[in-house]
Image (cartoon, rainbow, N blue to C red; front, side, top):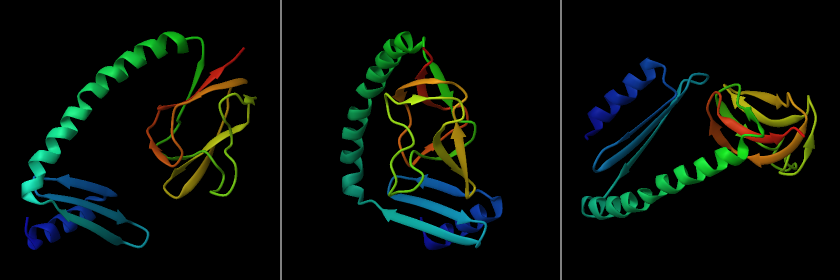
Length: 163
């Protein structure tokens, strides 16, 4: 991919309104992030040596193949155990934060007792920080999302034992 094609891709992404585009080809990885506030564009281009591209891809494929099988088995067993729990799901798309700030303790941990209205986490969406409050009372059994990770709408975040 030459410089002219990369420049055309940047212009296309900027006009499309997309906030981030990732493109991976055999020898190039490109990530383009745009910010509408300042209208800045950030482009990362990483050249992959052609000789290393094929061997590196094969071990990664081998590692990833058994993982979904184990995940499916774990999901089946956890679904049976988790049926008695209430799942708290993300109401919006954004970035989940389990702490109010980096130097503060987390809102909740496994084993904590919560009541309706308690703040469980914060989800940042479009530079707005939304406190996610509990709609149920109970005990946190499992935390399903990592701190500082992207979450989707309706993604399970916490399991709560209502008893």
